[in-house]
Image (cartoon, rainbow, N blue to C red; front, side, top):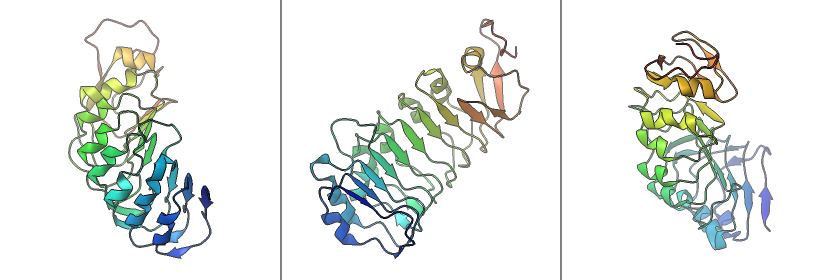
Amino acid sequence: MTIFHLHENALSGSIPTDLGRLSNLSRLSLRGNTLTSTIPSELGKLTSLFKLHWLFLHNNLLTSAVPSEVGGLFRSFFWDDSNRLSLSINLITSVPSEIGLSWGLGFLLLDNNALTSIPSELFMLAELRTLALSNNMLSGQLQSEFGLLSNFEQLFLDGTNLTGPIPPEVAHLVSHASLGVLNIRNNSLPGVLSKNDICRLGMPSCTYRSTWYYDRIAFKNCSLDYDCSDSLCGCDACPC
């Protein structure tokens, strides 16, 4: 068996530990049930021969910490856009440092949980394309290390109680051609965007503390301002 999908089947109780014996799985989806208790460490055995590409456990009632064995599941030496770990919409409280060993991850979805911090090892995932941390209980300043993940296509940090200022390393992410979505709405993040960034993203002329919605970037309740110190970029979107 290589694909095992039991999503949206009104399953309850805990995840069976015997699932860890299905060493040929490439996809395991248990999303959209009412599974409770912790994620069993036995799922870490699914890393056999680097065959696993999907582990979808989102939209359940899973609690406590992600086991270290599961954090390091995607240890492939080759990045693959199809490698996806989704733990969204649960009651998970922490992510292990072993997440930094999952070099092959393309998507990591941890939004809508009870996380209060993220391990620094997460910033070792240099090939990560999508990271979702929205609607957790993170606190403190937005880490400059997010800027190390220069291959981002989507970064969701909205509703995480982060405070400013926005580090220049993070602000610089908007200059990357690969970036499709940067969402930092509903935080307390004062910061500055250069006029070149504004024009490259095609932003309309907006006023301080306005609400912005675009294809590429979303800010709300952020006290972002414009940096008018550099030379005029010459586009219609420039507010300076």
